[in-house]
Image 1 (cartoon, each protein chain N blue to C red):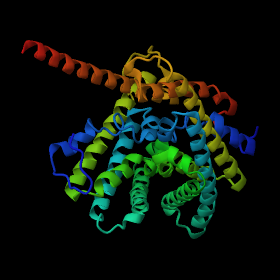
Image 2: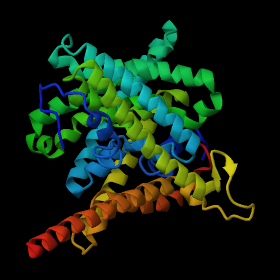
Image 3: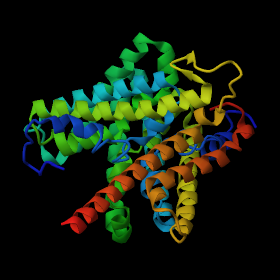
Image 4: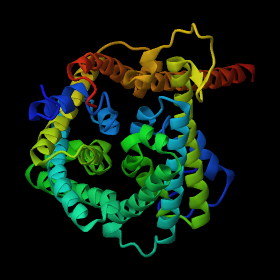
Length: 221
Length: 196
């Protein structure tokens, strides 16, 4: 893994974007920004809207931080980042309210709570403050996409199991017994836990295969 | 109980609509600092204090914003107040209890990005609580947060002694535990109706 060293600008490579999707996925690997992940994923549409809103704030605030990185005094940098993020969140809040009031009500306070999403502040501090605009844009887009994918993978599972629908269209016959607990708070914890179990199982299996492969090669030589 | 009585607001925030287990606010410290009961207790107290300070300030700020008709600045003002309150707690704690300061580590400055605190300030504004109600609400939310953290820490202390399959260790197990706690707390839902 090519983690950027402090005070050293990263070159623009495919990894800059792809890292956010899998290797450093903010939700599944780094376990950041869990509150919206659990709270608004009771339907696919909510999950998608939340993912896009967060990506917008993430990309815009990272870009601004990257542009201003030589101007912001070190002592007040966190406060500056927070104000920048809060500005973009206010914009998103008003835009969503204007586009769809239903969606706005469904997401509730969680749009404004994007301010307190640690992914965004984490990106500003750990990446945008040290890198050029172009790499920052690509990297934060990747992170945003990774976050959206994570939200969607929870949202679809919970909607299918909990309401028997996908994006509002019924999938099963009308005799399908919905698993209501999945769209209630405990379901969020259970589904995310199940995803994490699956990933750690896959990772263990891969690690075991690699060691087994090495043993065979050692014996063969 | 009436929906706007102080007792109801306190119980509602602490148990019925527990901030962590029902509203999903403050999950990061809930998963991060719930390894030991002692640390969880201290973290809960620190968070409760910040909640109390920021809720009081948020109440005052909201009054000023409404008087000047600049409510769109609400979010920026709230987050600035919370960041200052956290800084205050950090300085006090560093001076009087350096051991505790070290134990909480990175999670102390991260109280700023604890959505439970910003959520508290936003909810009390949406629901138009008066000053007494805001205080009861923030105390209740703090109590609920501490309660959830302590319960989780107790469970995890016990589990660390037992023999688990390696796949389920770490975050996945914590989430499953949290799901079960959340199921248990859903039992309280009948107490309050849907005054969410």
